[in-house]
Image (cartoon, rainbow, N blue to C red; front, top):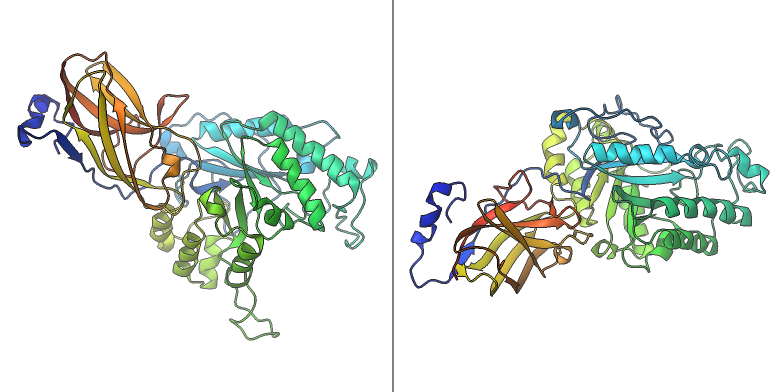
Amino acid sequence: MPTLQAASHVENWRAQFHKDETLQRVRPKEFHGYLPNPHRGTTTFQRFNGDEIYPGLAWDDSKGPLEFAPFRGGPDALKNPRYLDTTLSYCRWLWSVIEPEQGAYRWDVIDGALEAARARGQTLQLRIQPYINDDMPAWYWDVGGKLDPKSKPERREPDHNHPSYLKHWGAFVRAFGKRYDGRPVLESFDIAYGGPCGECGGNTTRATAKKLVDVYLKSFKKTQLVSMLGTFGCAYASRFKGLGWRGDCYGDLRTEGRGRVPDSLCWNHMLDAYPKEVHEDGVQDAWKTGPVTLETCWTVGYWRKQGWDIDWILEQGLKYHASVFMPKSSYIPEEWRAKLEAWDNRLGYRFVLRQMLLPLEAKPGARANYSLFVDNVGVAPLYRDYPLALRFRQGQRSAMVKLKTAPRAWMPEINYAAGAFTVPKDFPRGTAEISIGILDEKARAPRVLFANEGNAPDGWLPLTFMDLKH
């Protein structure tokens, strides 16, 4: 293939083809580095791109950010020296923080977080947690909230099955959905309906879990919903296509038997919880239509401190077809960094254009055939509707042509498609440069980069030339 950079030789680009050839094959080289693509990869936690990470092995589940200074830095300020590159943030707040008084919502906090994520080149995964310790909203007990009769007095855990919980938690979720459903920067919302941190479902019965999940389903018609693995709600949500799931405590390979069982034969999440819960919740194939998020047990630094097998842990994550990794904004050990970066590149989708067939010449306004072979070397599809398009350009003149092939349909490994498009009719006789891109339709610009060498700064992947003849 001729290099598109050699613009002075455009007029000779067909010299390598025989005069009787009508078809050209385009085979861009694969790119193996990091791509800042949306909806996949590693997230920051309670922080945004470029913020300092937590010190040591600590993190804080309960304290989401409340103040948001304007971001005035450039691209260099978005680097995370001891962390992985990211286009995702994940934040969560307590219910008592966002609704401190009944019906009085701290939407300024959520608005600020969404704007902070946007300014740092991220979308925001979000969770509201009913409680963690004894921090239910104080007003909840005054309007009929009841304690779980099995709860320890000092924890003051609510009875999720009491009508007051469905009423007031349900009202909060509905208010949140009314304001934020469909916001472009809102990546996903956790179906965190009960229990400490909203992770385990608390004391909900199956019937209550169904009612609570239904509140989320009715309140969020556009924003991606993510259920909590190992809950009654996740098992119920598995019957609906398009819902994702989040697994907490990914990486846990604890070995201490504590004198009750032999060391190395104790219960842990990776060998006991994950396989069992994925099976019992019926989410083995949920990854085909909704994203999987894996959240670390402790931190990656803690894994290394314990001497756990990082290669096995990462391999298991790919088998669950994860799109998102949340390591709590705690440092990545330098000696494991290369492994984590290579693994991160395989999370979610990663599209390598192996080959595209196009005509060598075409008439403006006429139909032209194409075919393409895209290798999704990731482990999941792209769950969003971004159209595929060709761009024709001659000097200052350019035009986009959408192709009917849908990137959303590109599953892991081999994807082939063929079709036809109409060549832009207003182009004069001459040679046009052809590029390909996966578009943000509203912006009419590429949003998803191909994993090929030569992506232009504007996101288009230059492919070849085509002679336009009238």
